[in-house]
Image (cartoon, rainbow, N blue to C red; front, side, top):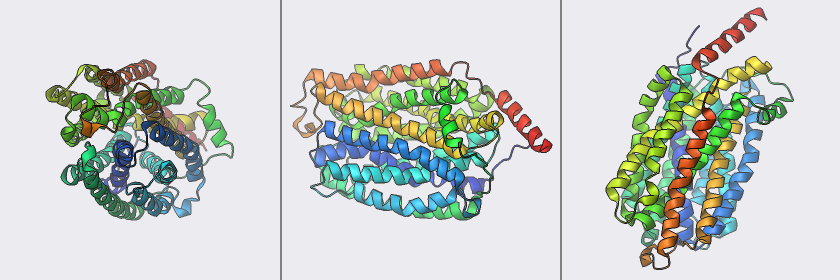
Amino acid sequence: MQKHRVSWSILTAYSSLAFPLAAAFLILQVIIPTYYAQVTGMSLSVIGVVLLVARLWDTFTDPLVGYLSDKTPQHWGRRKIWVLISAPFICLSCLALFNPPVDAGAWYLLFWTLAIYVTGTMAIIPMNAWGAELSPDYNERSRISGARVLLGLTGTLTALIVVAIYGDAGSSGENAAMQNTLYILTILVVVALVVSTLLAAFFVPDNNTVHIPSASFTSALQLLKTPSPFRTLIISFLINGIGSAIPATLFLLYVTHVLGIADKAGLFLFVYFICAAASIPIWIALAKRKGKHQVWSGAMIMGCLFFISAPFLGQQDFTWFLILVIGTGIAAGADLSLPSAINGDLIEWDAERNGHKRPGIFFALWGTTSKLAYALAIGITFPLLELLGFSANVAELADAANTPAAIKSLAWIYGLPCVLCKLFAVYLMYNYPITQDVHNEIRRKLHAKQLAD
């Protein structure tokens, strides 16, 4: 059976799309919530509700985009046409959202967050389906997913370098510097998105045939209602995603108020993503030998072993937190690369079971799950922190408005839910049925059926 290996030139052109998209969504998820709280004076509850509403709305658009992407005529370029159309609208959304006027309110934040989520969906869902279609091979899909994640992490690291050079993301006293930094980041995202979109459009093949019946969307949703490998995987991905999203959204607040070393926030983020990027080839090699879901489960357990210490750290615990950052960063390499590759393998499982491939819908539901995890994380934790008496607008006052109990609440919310969620996801993935041998057998059956037809 052919392995369908993708050339490095095609792989690079395809994966380059992840660079600007990852940079944009890092800014949105890590910097923008705290930035709007400090600059516009919006409360944490308002920001949490706004971002939750925007994310929840996006969960409705994901399946629609995936379905329409599968149904797009092949002569247009089923996946690349969506990437081409979405690019200018993503650029416009970044310009507005990352550079708000001084009087920007909740409606402004809601409108432009909705805009970047919807237009980002128009690029990301087809892009992920496109990657799964480049090769049907079990291990090659790990390579494609890993390359995409590596380019995405490169975009993330580049954005962090810009923040480190031009502004301090963790200090409310540097708002003017951060405004300038966000403008520079906007230019970076726009230029990189234009270049990567053109590279993918001209050099990456998009010629897979997708045959789906008119009721495919409805039948795909049925997969969530009945026990199946897809339901097991997507629920595990959601639970683990919530666990990862909570510390991601609270990172700047944790470093500023719990550790009291806001000036080191950029360094911690840089080390985290460097470790994640460096670990990806190792996780992919391990997955080739041991299996994707087994290795992913091991990585989640590894993340728990480090995150369990987060609630017990305090002022100036630089060394211990750096160890936590390194350990969780290494574990994140598997989180970022393997689940998507596992989802790609279910395309053949679905085809063997139902008689047709629908990668757009599968990755749409995947994208919806990822966004729902982030929405739940920020929609729950920000209002909960405010309810417990924590304020985000007092960094320059040396936490005068935050009691020790409020700061300890932040520390526990930062670390404990992550551990609980990841352990539950590991439990759900125990005995996941689609191994490499099972997947190869499914491919053999599909190939035999094609020859018979």
